[in-house]
Image (cartoon, rainbow, N blue to C red; front, side, top):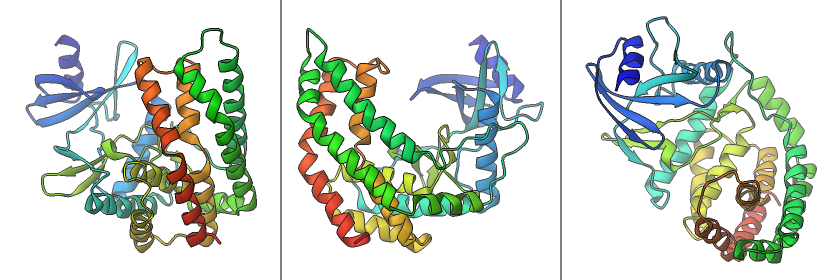
Length: 332
């Protein structure tokens, strides 16, 4: 426990115990329970995230995993070749995406986070993180990626069950990707981007159940801002809807409730609804899964990949129905 004690000392903490959990360390110290995390990115990216969290706190959204400052005043310490940060440990439970009460609170909290993000100026030394204006390009690139991965699968002599399922179904999803690209082209995406640039707002970019924590008093906290960046909020909204609804049989009534909760806290414009629709349409889940499979970006066993692609294929019809319902209600 030598290196951990040395890191804790640089935060003016005395380490009492340490245990790994979910890619971080739960540490008990003389000043309470904390979270110790080794970063896989550099100082400039960390400073963007640190500044973003401090901005949220200053703007009335305090329930984030705030970084402790080390003795030298920085929100990190360097040890060996790595960077380490420490935050408060939020003792609570992950958001249950099958619980209507919790998901509605999460939708409202996301809207408040987006509101509080407005006006964020990158602090000195931080690297600008932004996906603003890139989605025309990204959707085309990822659609073409699906086609390329199909060719890769077809070229294999010894095809796996995953390969066979991917080859059989991917053209349908290429077609869906084309619809998403067309929807984005017909939308006022560029105007939404310009508005976001003016507002200087950012997204969490990984707003999912294990980053939404309810404490013992049932207060909601948002943690793990590793992927946050300047981005239109439609991305977070669509991503959140997909993550919740795939666990609830694509129940459109749940979608309406979540959109209402968000809209009550921060009004969604007509232009944004069409951009959200484009994000909902795009087969991001299949693209990401195939990318991990064909480019070895995950150490999942084969049966995990197989289970996940079967789930996506089995959800195809209810997913398409859901997208149609969303378009009928919010866009047409």
